[in-house]
Amino acid sequence: MFPVEYRDVKGVAVEIMTCPPCRAARNKAAKSPAGVARRKRNKATEKGRQSAQNYAHSTKRQSVLKKYNDSDKRRENSARWNATAGAAACRKRAFAKWYSKMALQPDWRAMSNMRKRMSKHVKGTRPSETLSALVGDVAAFRAHLEELFDCRMSWTNYTVEWEIGHGIPFAAYNHSLKSDVDKCWSLENLFPQMKKENRHLGSRIHDAYATKVHLFPSHWKGSIPESGKTSFSQHATDVELSDQVSESEYSDEE
Image 1 (spheres, rainbow, N blue to C red):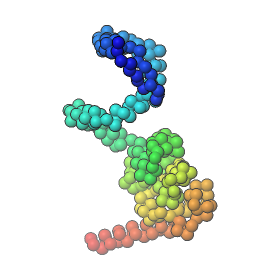
Image 2: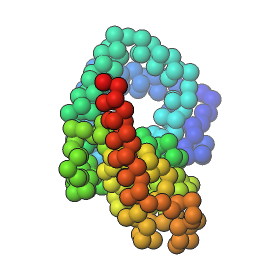
Image 3: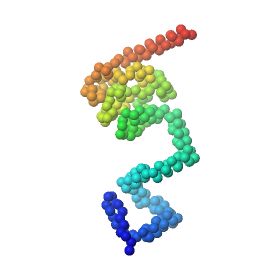
Image 4: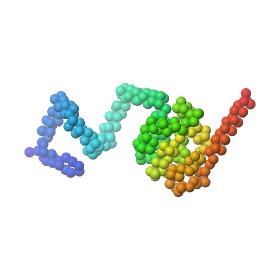
């Protein structure tokens, strides 16, 4: 007689009904070429695919993955793989793909920059999912910005001459509140803005957004505080004057 053994099933101890020699024989058969071929045929069937999908989303699978990810074995395997030439080639291909996409698709780069910026301020969420829910896909984001372009803006001078600005600055919002996050990063609060204008405006509200009460941060309580008031047209004039001064100084030097 063999000693009674138990295994944990969803927190319940269940008696194992097969003896150790039988389990060893079964495992050996499963790892044999015939056993591998049998599993492969099963995975090709509709029932097999459904079973694999159910297991992939099960709590059992998640617990197994968590246990493995927290183990020393996983760290050892990861370090061993990262030191191989195959891993270096994978990283190189991934970087080349990312770089070409950033260089050839400025609209995708703009979306990526927004995700990075959001990740610095919105904690506990996935920036890609949160931003996609607020502004839609890259095509919708691109169409919104292009609709607001002026004669100085194009995708070829993105980040060089212009950038994405907030009508009501993101510094005014409390990013621990979902309502403020939704208002701050909504399409209605985002617009293409010349870099110099954005720098001069700073963390004050754009005139065009002074009447958009539905976008105001929660703590403003429907009215703009004194610290948020400014005249954008005045700042635009300041930019032009500073440019003229710089040009005149440069001419004098010549």
